[in-house]
Length: 432
View 1 (cartoon, helix red, strand yellow):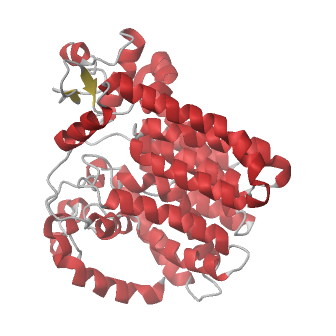
View 2 (cartoon, rainbow, N blue to C red):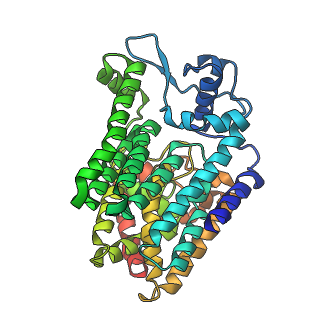
View 3 (tube, one colour):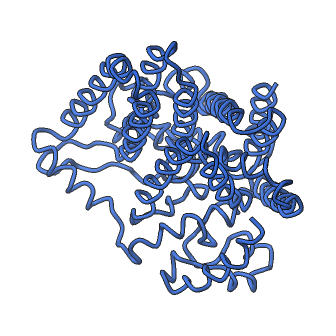
């Protein structure tokens, strides 16, 4: 039932709700991923120069598209900015139905991700509660928006949700199939984006720890996909950049980077920045902290909570220290989408225990606020972007700009707004 409801809902939202006037069908990196798929199908290469010149992106992007290409240092080779994993994944859907086919494919993939989150929540909550939380998470911001966004983060969400479920359901009798399927899934992540390699490492270690009493079996059945992935990734990078691979990657990294205006503020900004923070656009996720603490307190779930918490924290620190932690022109907070399965699992536990903790009214208030924000964004997609101007798009456009002084802006003011965040934390903690 959950799968059917979510799949139908995503399809209706993707194709029935109109975009604001003047907003392009695809934004940010999306048209470039589609163009890479187009070039692979029709040119059998990833040299997009002719595709940009021929405006092969015209069916899904109006106007002139900035080229996401660079020249490999010391060579005449032109390569795209983006990893090849997502374009390869969407090839069949793009070939059959263009951009709409890709959207349908992503709708179904995200539905699979939600179903896996639901199955994991069943380990910690009652069935009805797990169903309700999974359904509400699926149709609330930001997951509902990323159900049709053509970004590798959407696919990473699905893979992380799937591997966590498989690991948590690991038993001696299914050790071989679990090791193989988890290894295959984790092996694809670096090809979507190199930052996802952190999941490959951490979740594989979680698998080995979870099945440490039969670790030899897990290692034997997972080693082939992992070794093959490492070799294939190195071969692909060598093909792109040549023999002096490390120097080329460092040069490219510098050329693509942006100035570090306020180092490390993204660690806080990803959650609390008024333009780019998860808790601003999806305040319900603040209850994930309560769920995490509750899981830690129970001996039966303590190891699971620690493993998932460490995975979340390591990835958060990685993307939070990245110069462009805001994620460019993409629905915010793009870089946290891959770890939302973990937050939804914690959220389910937090909501499940709300009656015992006397937090029912507070939880309902957060539900209503999150739902209202989601509805506003669905009917005006421009509100889901941050433009780096220091004020929240939704408050600004709805005539409530005077309220923006009450919220921190780490992107524009750095750690100057840390005291403001501390005040909000002290005010809200008793209600979470």
